Length: 118
Image 1 (spheres, rainbow, N blue to C red):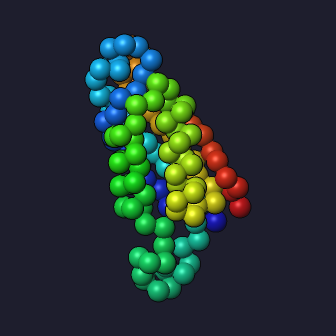
Image 2 (spheres, helix red, strand yellow):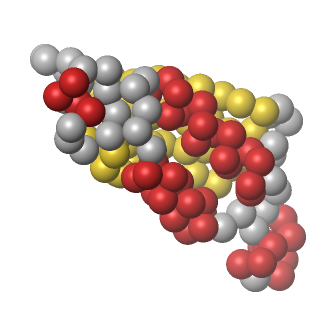
């Protein structure tokens, strides 16, 4: 198994449970690790034979910008499902951080793994 990754993808969205959070946009940050086999892409040197991280990033940015979830858990679950279902990824590890959500901490968030890691 090979890993294609994206680190610290920052996206502004409506996220949170408090009334004031529903009226503003906050920045969330995503780290993704996606299982794939890069051998064919390495052999052909063609973007058509690999997991296109730019396409994944653009899709997630569009989805997250348009979303208005209350919980980071829901946003993480939905984002992981997009990667698995739309990009043919077998396994994904997604970390979703919400900077500034807890006074005294840099950020808070969740880490989830979905699919079969093999």
